[in-house]
Length: 342
Image (tube, rainbow, N blue to C red; front, top):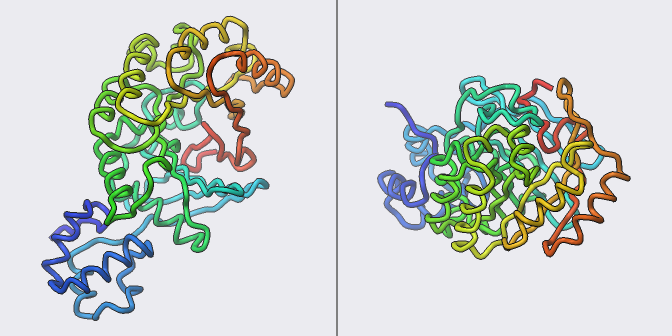
């Protein structure tokens, strides 16, 4: 019999499976508490559960988590993990702590097919999608490693395009936010996409609670296409319609991620284009300095260039934030993840 992973099931599916093993409600509650409250999937650690039930659980479910192959710690306290999956594939995830929150940046694919010109993951190409349990497992691995420093926020901004793996993504969201599951607040989960327009409509219609971030990087079609080939398929006018539709279905503002690149997307024409594109959307713009990546010709802006651009952007009727890079010294910042190949 091929065993399915414990974390691949929805909460209701898992409860039904467990009822075939232990029909006493208090035993079922104990096991669910171990999994969803204590983030424990190692059956031997479930110390208040009888051995015969633990044996049956072991026979029924796969429960192995990804292996931590390497850990890199940044001067800013960010931590990058290199994880090995069961088929030997490698992915990276990043823990980003601040005074008020602990954010986990999760990967959704081994590599990526979208070929954005500023991203290290694009150089790998797409190997495969991650399964539901491989998404959820990253959360379990991080909580197991940090123990007392629980994750407060999740961003799906690691390796891969989340909306190209939408089935696993939706399963992940349901498990994370289910009241009887991990009970994670949807307002603390952000999905970042390069702009797969049909999938944005799909998510909007599913009544799932989460925040959406769009990797925009330019509001000029020719420039955005040069950076992001997805714009040739779904240009800015189509992306905007999808974002407005999503916004009509969600109480959360949409975030536009804007990676600043010297001598490319920080001029006055770029500011005018942003005003035209974003002016009638309930949104915020998140500015990020491009993190230099070996082998890519883009140039990171100076602090003086950034200050000048922010001054121009702040004239727009839109909330603007400048998020300083975290983990750049360990190749753990935005766009730098490459599955251990950097």
